[in-house]
Amino acid sequence: MSKLSSIEPKEVFGFFENLCDIPHGSGNLQQISDFLVSFAKERNLEVTQDKELNVIIKAPGSKGYEDKAPVILQGHMDMVAVKNDDCDIDMKKDGLRVTTDGEYVWAEGTSLGGDDGIAVAYCLALLDSKDIPHPPLEVVITTNEETGMFGAAAIDLSSLKGRQMINIDNEKEGQFITSCAGGARVYSVLDLEQEEVQGEKCRVSVKGLLGGHSGEMIKCGRGNANVILARALQDAIFAVAGGKTDDNSFYMKGCENSDLKIISVNGGVADNAIPSSSEAEIVVSKNCIDAVKSSIAKTLLELKGELESKDDGIDISFDTLESGSFTAFTAKDSLKICRMINTEPDGVQAMSAAVPGLVETSLNLGILKTEGKKVTIEQSVRSSVETSKKTLIHKLLTIGGMFGAEVSVSGNYPGWKYRQHSELRDHMVLVYKKLYGKEPELMAIHAGLECGILSEKIDDLDCISIGPDMQDIHSAKEKLSVKSTANVWEYLKAVLA
Image (cartoon, rainbow, N blue to C red; front, side, top):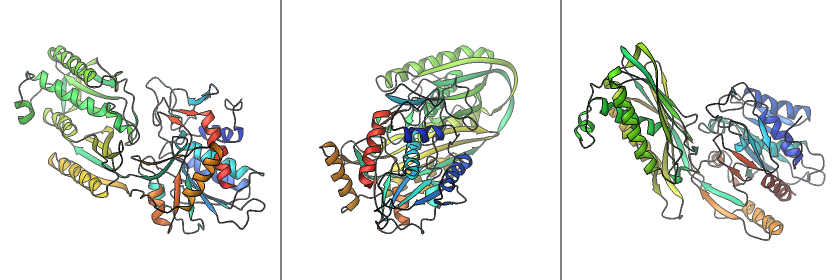
């Protein structure tokens, strides 16, 4: 039985639950893309699917609206697939355990994918309807937005006739996004030396952090588990080598003969999600165990003080696993991993002088992973100032080069500039005032939206981004408001009518 069948609007939540039944994390989109194509064909709608699995569905206007100008509705089909450490769902193969209490919808143990599954559900409900008045619709559902907007970058929109686009990728009802930051992904790969090491294999785990969207929540100062892990490991390397807390020579000279060696470091699920957990496997000699434990306890105490009232659930655990011989990075390269991460900037870099409270430039070390001899650092860079974005990318390139990393940049997308004169914005504001008796909030955001890329593909594209209330997107605490989903549904229908 459908868990969402009891809540309104049933036509929207019905399709949303269908989408939740299909695994659709970024990079795992064949099944959901094919589902959208089948949906369109079953209703005799014009549909195209490209090699990037983007889907465009076109529907004629309803009776009396056939000759109106088409309106583009746009969202993305991929989600950030995050789960709690104790969740047994395989997010590449299994659907979500979606549930509701009538006030919110969430998924048990995982992210929900309301970003941006609710946009797709709205579109499917409109396309499926026989009695909702609307002009011709051109529905554009893109892929891999969460990992670099690769679908939007590749999609061919030359067949579209619409010049007004409603993007449904916002997480706050009553807020109209009118511009956003540009961004890029930076990948730094360290190719390191390994050796066989005798000792105690141990695990260091950073957990308990809030995580969240690296655009929306970066200004909150939440802890980054990958950055914290590198700090804890570097402190432990120092402690094992006998360094004193007031001895700065370690940080200058390197202390490259420590008995602590790293086997692997892994953390995070997406470069645009602040990582809530991260872990390392290390090898240390038995007589160094107490020094490592003590160092980690000291680092944790420091971090609890620094993150108090911002992210106070932080925990760093240390577990001894087994004794034996293990393949690990050399002492020199174990330190190199930590030093590079601790040297690179992270978090808010600049606030906007023009818009109070708006982050202008930031970056997030979202993914840290070890594969054989290689350690990869994946970062999301954002800025509403193109030259600041470029400068920050160049800084990462420089730091990576200093440590001998191979650094590449991908998914470089432009910001979306505010449009001084917008017929769509004027119309949507007027409809909102008629429905609710108040003005909507017009907002510039630090997060990235596909509007910038798509505006470069369609001349004179007029667009606005809206959406229902969501909490803690890109985390296992994500929730979608039922009432707000219904409100935005009624508003969207009024706008189209």
